[in-house]
Image 1 (tube, rainbow, N blue to C red):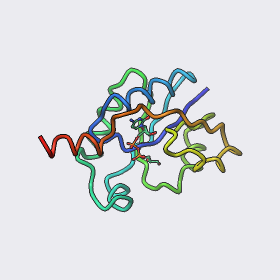
Image 2 (image 1 turned 90 degrees about the horizontal axis):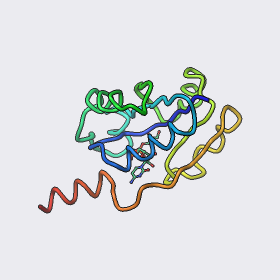
Image 3 (image 1 turned 120 degrees about the horizontal axis):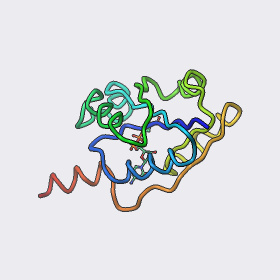
Length: 129
Ligand code: C2G
């Protein structure tokens, strides 16, 4: 079973590692769509701290990740699922319900987020240090 997931994975932290390891353990391979810098700018009005090439290199180096690609648009998930032959889409539960319409193409599973850590909180902690 091939699993697919998506994310920015900026300032990579243990919450990111947890969801990727859990996603990988649900199947035989894990493909990760990494949100492009441009997509982040469009979505959040700022660029990620780490650029997309570095974010992709970090993900590609993980034992639990088999393949990475650039996610250019949030609306292209159906196309990516088909292109990479994914059987299951895994996302954190901050996205709960948002991708249910894709369950005609593959299973859709939401996993609980790791509490008390996020890129936003890391930025705040560093800023106020
Ligand atoms: N995550 C988690 N626990 C945390 C923080 C993040 O499980 N404490 C999960 C998120 O739920 C998500 C993944 O890690 O599934 C990546 O998180 P982000 O980089 O914040 O992803 P996001 O910017 O939400 O981009 O197409 C969807 C987007 O690309 C998702």
